[in-house]
Image (cartoon, rainbow, N blue to C red; front, side, top):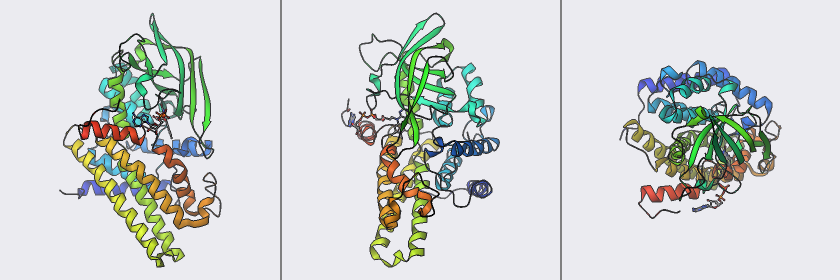
Length: 398
Ligand SMILES: Cc1cc2nc3c(=O)[nH]c(=O)nc-3n(C[C@H](O)[C@H](O)[C@H](O)COP(=O)(O)OP(=O)(O)OC[C@H]3O[C@@H](n4cnc5c(N)ncnc54)[C@H](O)[C@@H]3O)c2cc1C
């Protein structure tokens, strides 16, 4: 096993770090999902997104014809790792187009859909911002039970139903919608489809939902007789479950980003412990060393998945395995971090610019968001079910 990156990949890493120096404030950490909250953060994220797009980094692994760089799996990994480490904004949920909508359209979208939507995503402009509407009030982990109905009438589908926890719906121009096109099937996994919905369509209402600590990341969406042209169906009608599983596998493959992010937090905690003299305490040194071991473990899991993809080995359960590991680690890093920061850690995570806030509130924020990270894109239990079924050949959980 050789964990060294090539000279070309190392040069690319240096180029990304140069970009960070030139474009991000020196004490910038980035708060995951947070850029979708305040207008000011959103504008900054979009400005970075456009700059990344000009370098073709935003959609780095896409073919050049769609605005990408045709990068290798390992170049993409270097990019994602640096994005996580430096908190480079403009690449997360709101731009979900880059991570799963675009790659899914390349796999099972029509040529017309590819030509219309991929360049918009790759340009990093507001018209390339997507939200993903899967979850419903009674369908989360049991996604196949979703009820939002798309009824075909002539050359349109009429959509009725409700979605919930839709990140970035208040910013998005397009919605990647999972819906039921045939309600009469014997099994709930059948009769589902994926659609592209213009968020400016009449009949759509978006209502904010606040997180446990008050941020506006996600929303409810209500669809009331929303008309969608039939050409916005993605893939094959009623084959949505297979398409959804593929799109979710793209979504869950982000652990290299998380290992980069957690490494940065650890590095900053080490600096803090050194500056404050906490280094003198053996238990603090033990805790920091323990985190380092765990973060390195997550990185190796992520590298294993990337290595398999680079060898064109089909990855089935690996992204779920890696996400389950990342979910646990977010919680662990935040708890150790708050212990080390002491009373400062009680500050409101939304007051990241307070003079009392250490490390721009990054660890307080991680503490509050880590339960959400363990739920988003499928809960840790769901990931374990997938790893158990496909990795260990255990009986299925549903
Ligand atoms: C930060 C964040 C962002 C999100 N963004 C989006 C988004 O953009 N679009 C979107 O569609 N959704 C989004 N979601 C919603 C998310 O996908 C769902 O919350 C998630 O799938 C869980 O569904 P649920 O909330 O209905 O919980 P439930 O499915 O009701 O689960 C409740 C509990 O039961 C456990 N459980 C359920 N079934 C099983 C089982 N078979 N085996 C073992 N345990 C089980 C779960 O692990 C969980 O602990 C987001 C959520 C968060 C927190």
